[in-house]
Image 1 (cartoon, rainbow, N blue to C red):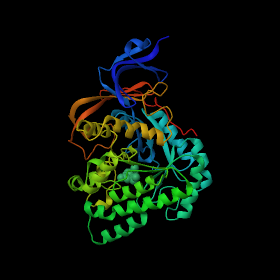
Image 2 (image 1 turned 30 degrees about the vertical axis):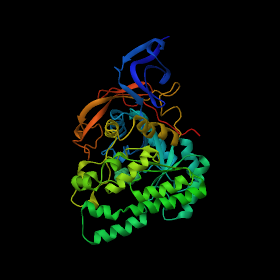
Image 3 (image 1 turned 180 degrees about the vertical axis):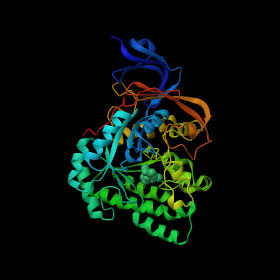
Image 4 (image 1 turned 120 degrees about the vertical axis):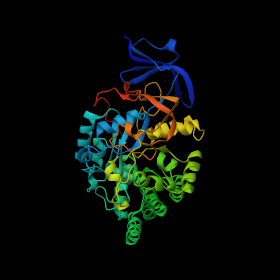
Length: 447
Ligand code: DOR
Ligand code: ZN
Ligand code: ZN
């Protein structure tokens, strides 16, 4: 019996090396990686024409919206954007309408995604009001809990450290991580009141209202709770030098903490915010060049665990408003992450090994995504083929995301995802989505 598919004439990234070989896929899995002559006969044969072939990206920070926020993004548009960007698995954030915060709301999102998604989707849950419900949320398949320290989303009073500790203890028992948006609510509130009193409505006032200290303070608070509970903590979108230092202190102490950084915090700073105004508004906000340098330095030293897009789509009308206090924060990133990072590789600021580690291998490890994150026999065939020499300009009007804006619009990039395979199925081919909605998998936590 022939296998389902053979991809041949590829340059495959395997454990730190690019190898000229082919891949045989059967029932969604990679069953053989070998020179072409040693591959089994296949129903479909595809010539990858010598292109670099990487594990599909695992984006651990994505807001797919849907439900009452479907006007911003839905499971099809968001996962089509993922496929176009070479992302084969997204972990969906819980700040939805309704908020994902119990087994019922989680099950409903899984049901909707199952019918509409074209890449694999896993889910975060916010904390429930009743902590006894934590186990049922994990049994339903939540990959992790998400805790916002900047505002109350979900059932927990975030000002109450005792309660947070109880929550962390529960989660530690279940073995799943807690991902944290680390900005301290009280600091934000005080600063915002100060800024609003001045009557300012500009983006720089917004940045002043969300200072790096708010990030550092929240990280320090969470680290104390991580120490007491032993829970695995993943810090989302670390943005500042002081925040990073607070994180690194905990990491060097040997605590089970990881962090992610976004492409926008690595590639943009306050100058860009002044230019693109509310279109580039995001939480935590863009920072100074010094902060950006600190992020790069930590990344090069291997202290950053993951890169994630924080794809946070809104409508252009919600972004382009007069007063910064009315603007929705968030940048769509699924379709720009890989081209931007490949450009960094071509410019020598990042190696292919860094890229694969930060966007596939480590996210799979942090979120316990078994048989994913690298191209290996037995693993799911989640694959992105890239043309590392293709030069073009980012154009958000071509996005599959409903959020057709980007602070990277017009940027020249080098490196383009040309084919995306999800569980062995070709989903994106030369920019076109070629799979039917609902053909991917809902990925659930397996203890
Ligand atoms: O910029 C942001 N946008 N930060 C968040 O924490 C939420 C996100 C969103 O959902 O739009
Ligand atoms: Zn966040
Ligand atoms: Zn987010």
